[in-house]
Image 1 (cartoon, rainbow, N blue to C red):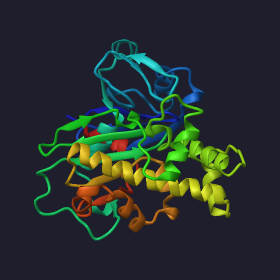
Image 2: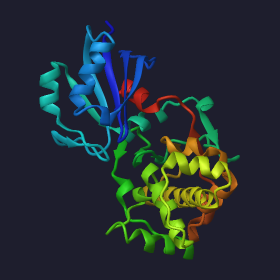
Image 3: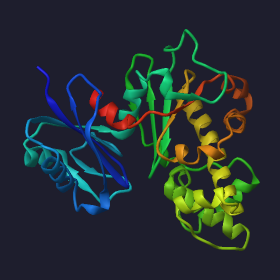
Length: 310
């Protein structure tokens, strides 16, 4: 017998909900809410169930940013926090919580090739599956996960490792950001707020201190704002280098799969060849990194579909 399951992909800015039947990934009643419109996750779920016929829902699966091994969850980049046990009791529904990037990785495990944009001619070999694959994506935060050869997922909080500059310009960016943050993690750069930090830092380096939102930066780059364009270029260069760093740390020789909401928004500024060059600048491992496939997910709602699989 199939059951109706409520699934949710909870981010720092938006919460996405949908209904699925067990054993399927087809989404129905898909809705996106602004997290700051609700005082709690519970109230957002209750609102959704009332609006979309919650009768008959038998289970709930949520993909959330941050660790899920403890009962109490404080969402990263979000004012919501909740007890898994208490939420399950209040909703009277069995609850499963998974890391948001584990959900992405679950979908990548069976993603069709038509939902991937390959950066160049490098493709997975017939022997793929003998090494880990990296899943990484920038949104309100930076998510990192790995798929092991046996299919197991390795959750992480890799977005919070320290930023390591590559060249003199990036060193100057770091020094400016240290005025704002005691410790500059890569998420302070590779995220929506991170793009805003890059714009602010680049404007200071040009003695033109300014602040803009991420959408304003993207629009500005399209309309000739040199600081905006430089900030997007920095974002992509740093992202490429970080992808290469995680490949080395995880031994993810079977490929890099890029998800998240930021890269698709700035894709017109993405040069796959430049990305590859920044990605492979790994000293003695340059030749190894040159043979690693890199793909961008073009799927709709991979996080929710990963929840459905979970």
